[in-house]
Image 1: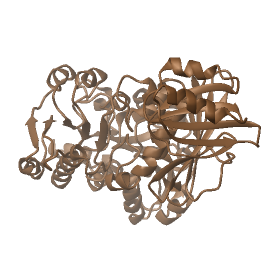
Image 2: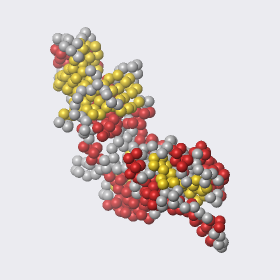
Image 3: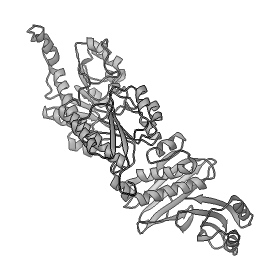
Image 4: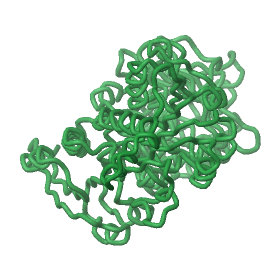
Length: 537
């Protein structure tokens, strides 16, 4: 928002049809200018995308790395639908671009289409329809099977999988599920049995796929998986074509191991006219129709437009896939802790004695214990910024850290002081060195460093700070003060932590203006000082 309270002006590109309600939202938004351009290839999209702040796509438009490299102003990409395998999310994240989808808009439509395909597969309804259309009254060729008292195996128990499970239970089916992220409590509440994949494959009469397409789930149905299935199993896929190894599926269909398959999605879309799937009598295919209901298409278009408007305005980031926070209100309420975490990361980066190879983060306290991910990302952002020419934000920081080979983990049991809410970060650098720094907020808004390795401190992390590693001897403070004073450098605060009187000490000295390197070299000659480092925050 500018100084007059007005929103900045944004440009949005829409590459497919959205609902009239969605377009009406855009027409009412005085700060949004939009263009609807359909039929874009990756090449033509790359030519068109410069200057746009927002982009809305469906499944047919591919947002490639080359498109993103040409997107000089892009801030947010909205996928009108669930699957985002047509968007290079890693490349978008590296460029700090928010990627969001609409996971709930087509849930009911997809679940219902799954059941429609399941019933069609059981009762051979499409085949019987075509036979009758061709003038044949053939009842014997189309004897089906019932769902009642059979076992459904659902791979992926998300929003859609849950609804498919409920509908299968209404038919009197038992439901097995394979989902590594489903808790035992959630499975019990859904009245499904959560089992290893091998047990699902061996026990299911029908298998429905509702998993996201990831490197771990690609070709989850392959020759080895099919070999573990029951004879005469039937498979329904309304999720992503890449979940199934098509060659293995065809072999299973030809051998009879798989009695039938109903497919709405394919590795290559549109499905080629010469696809061998179209020659199989025990295969039912539909052209990616699962979300194609009047209600779902209206909902998904309206939702993604509303999401992008709010994201561009910074009001809300719901359904963002690559942000540590989706709730902008929570982001604002956590801002003091996030700023503290950024400074903590920056200090670690500036004081590290070699290339950082590992980062460990520990969070304690009721106010922040549920927010380990955003606080960790804030630390990473602060850690990268002193060494990066490109902009670092909460989206690209984890990806940039990963690309540098830095290991990041949550830990417990760091030797830290006792404060109601405490953020601690330990880094290891090349050569075996390490450092632990802890920080907290006093009165919810006053940032303080309270630990530096084994030293207890009370340091406000701001401005220019000189960090002295020294011997705790008389005359040290006076000598440093004299040198800085003679050069016109005023000391704002001096905080010292020490192991014992006369032992080792670390001092954080805040100064009112920058200290040139030659002054640091001059101070380094003082025999009580082992090392001086400068931090800019």
